[in-house]
Every structure is written in C-alpha cells, then in structure tokens.
Length: 314
Ligand SMILES: Nc1ncnc2c1ncn2[C@@H]1O[C@H](COP(=O)(O)OP(=O)(O)OP(=O)(O)O)[C@@H](O)[C@H]1O
Ligand SMILES: [Mg+2]
Image (cartoon, rainbow, N blue to C red):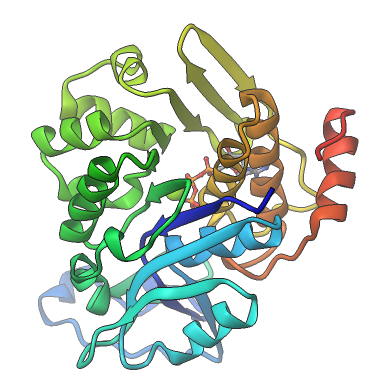
C-alpha cells in the first residue's frame, strides 16, 4: 500500500531568536515609556525554520509519512523551500507571493526569560490565494494556524471535497468570532487544541467541552508535560506524557504531536496507539531547541515507543 498523502495547511515562518545578556528592566524605565527608544546589543542570535505547516510536515516526514505542505512564502522563502525539498517533502503547493516577505518573528529574550517579539505575517496573510483543489489525492488534511482568510477558505474547500481534516486553531483562535468557530468545528472531523485554547474555544463558541467533542470524531486536548486527553465518541483516553531526557524548549511540541495524530489517523490506527505516538513525538521535540532541530527515524521512534509503552509501534 502506498503511503497516504496528508495535506498540511498552515504557516511557514522564519524565527529569529536573539538573547540579550542583561535584563530589560535595567534599560526600560517605567516612568519613561512614553518615549521609548532602546537598542539592545545581542551577541547570541539564531534563525530557526518554523511555522506550523513547516513543523508538522517535518515531523510527519521523519515518521515516514507523505506530507503535502500547502503554505505561502515570500521572495526570501527559497531557503525554506530548498530545505523541504531536501527532505523529500512535496512542496508543489508552497506558493511564493511576489513582493512579500515570508512570515517571520523576531524574538528578543533577556536573562529573566522576558520576551519582546515583533511578528510580520507577510506572505502568510495571502495564503487564501492557494486552493486545496490544486492538491489532488490526499487522504487527510489539517488546518493549522495560518492567515485568517486562508484558514476559512481551506477548511471550506476540504469540507466540500469530502476530505476529513483536523481543525487546529492554535494561536489563530482570536481571529475568529463564535459563528466562524462553530462553522469550522462543524466542518472538521477532528479538533486539536491545548488546554488554554480549549477554554478559549468553549468561551467563543458558547459550547461545553462535551458539546464540542460531540461535533467531531475525536477531540484532542494537549496538556504539556501532563500529557493529553482524547475523547472519541463514548470513549476517553488519557495519554501519558513520555518523560524526556531533558526539557529544553517547548516550542513546536504541539506541532510534533499533531504529526503523530495525522500519521495514526491516516493509517487507521486506534486512538491509544495514535495518541501514544503523538505524545512520544512531543517528548522528543522538547529535548531540542526550535521546532525542527530534533531528529529521529522509524527505528529510533519504535525503540523509544517500546521503552515508554512496552509495545511494538509498527
Ligand atoms: N515537558 C514535556 N514532557 C513530556 N512531553 C511533553 C512536554 N511538553 C510537551 N509534551 C508533549 O507534547 C504535547 C503537546 O505539548 P503542549 O500541550 O505544550 O502543546 P502546545 O501548548 O500546543 O505547544 P506549542 O504551541 O508551543 O507547540 C503534550 O501533550 C505532551 O504529550
Ligand atoms: Mg500549540
């Protein structure tokens, strides 16, 4: 059987992270913030490949899956496209929007772990110009955080095409009103949120967790180091977290987890195996800085899965 193709709709972004070896509070005086003009010299700087679609696609490819990434990039996006292609990820639906920058975040952190971030959405805001119809023959999809119009359009298109998908509103949740969120949940077959996003979704839709779960085949709520919970019909599964070797950086754990979900769903696995794989990927990710600096292959994942759960993965 050929590997089922999975459409990953979401953002592609560069994250530039700079570390200020001092404390912002030594340089920002509360009584002077009406004329703020500060420059921080940052000696440590790194640039990461990020964005939800990029992260999810990366993890799904490492698993041996067949991700089809659908995202918009700017004129500066060529290194990202080359990276995807280098991994053998289908980038035919990664579209360059001329005259724009790829979405990017500039994050400055200080010694107290405070952060000052500037985020430029750039090409991401034009993702609605790409259509799901262009991506033929996919078994499953995910609507991950992206431009608002793109998320609405792509969800509608997947629904119309009868392609099941996970709705993953993430940090894009505030872009939608209650009516829109109810419609997106109606269209979706699966819903994946973290605990905080779950609360926000309840508030905005006016629906309880049980009502939301009743709208989809499965509602997945992640709880960071406390694991995750999957409610599918009458069944509820408590998925334990897998103890990582080291906790380095939680950025992108949700995306790694979603790659596990997509793999399990696309292969028709039961929720226990699917959730456990997802949980393991989140744990592997947390051991490394950034969303795409961890590595694994099918053999090493299977070995860690056996260690954690005492069962065979594949
Ligand atoms: N410290 C940790 N130890 C073990 N597993 C973890 C840890 N942090 C995250 N995970 C795994 O990854 C999953 C997703 O993490 P989390 O709930 O933090 O997602 P998130 O809030 O969407 O994160 P982000 O948006 O930053 O990627 C968790 O359900 C868990 O299985
Ligand atoms: Mg998240």
